[in-house]
Image (cartoon, rainbow, N blue to C red; front, side, top):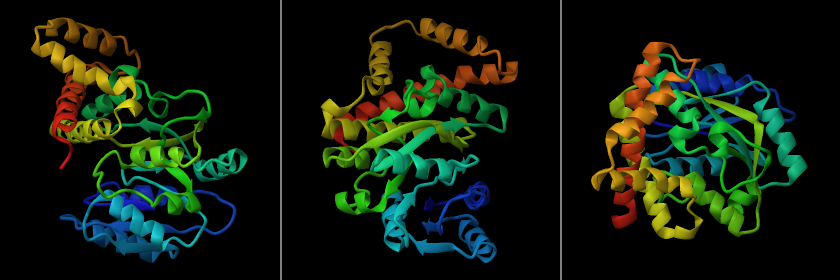
Amino acid sequence: MIPVRNEEKYLASAVESVFAQAAPGKTELILAIAPSVDRTKGIAEELQSRFKSLKIVDNPTGDTASGLNLAIAAASYEVIVRVDAHSQLTENYLKKALEVLSETGAANVGGRMHAVGVSPLQKAVAFGYNNRVGLGGGSFHVGGKAGAVETVYLGVFQKSWLQKVGGFDPKWVRGQDWELNQRIRAAGGVVWFDPSLVVNYFPRSSLYALARQFYQTGVWRGALTRQAPFQSSIRYWIPPLFVVAALFGFPLWLYLLFIGLIAFNALELPNGVKLRVLLVLPTMHFSWGIGFWVGLIRGAK
């Protein structure tokens, strides 16, 4: 299932990556289409004419959680695979995920989000996603050992577990996957990470879009922390605490020097991308940190 809104640029490649998967048994793909201002709906209908097992459901509210719940309700089979319109499943992702789901008996399994870029700025953003300094080093960003975790990227679910815990909560515009996984764990289910499961993700390709995304995500992460403060990982607190430190006189030149060392020691990056990392990482950190405090203090709206 893919929740979709204003995704004319990436939708076709995401859908094609799903239908390129090999899997035992029957499969279908459900697109939950939110009201869009671009050609998303038309592209979805064109894809439906190519792929006969593609279903389209309307998501009139436009929010992700409601779209996911509508897709779950329309699903015919016992395993639910969440895919993002900005992503591409890597070869044999589905086959491996089903094997892990069967072997572990987990309620949800997932793997690593591997960010990739096309333009120099998008490559810099991808570097931030894949680097511990950028997003704090969660296993689903930088990899790690297979095992039970608090949350995973996207997810391959037993449908019965989604039904048991009531699906995604529309209250959470962002962070709904983390919140769902907390309810699954509280109900006795296992959320399992396997580093061999890799999904390519195409991040935002402009500084404005990146700042807006990270501010909004920070707001919702702060609101989730407000609701469950003792379930929040320490890495979520690092950018907000740095924002406070900057307000109380921490020398920003030291921070920028540190970012510069990280960027220019990334030997795999061209020089033009390294220069953009100097803009991207502060944008990610400060947007998230400011948003987090807003969400923590007032909640999310």
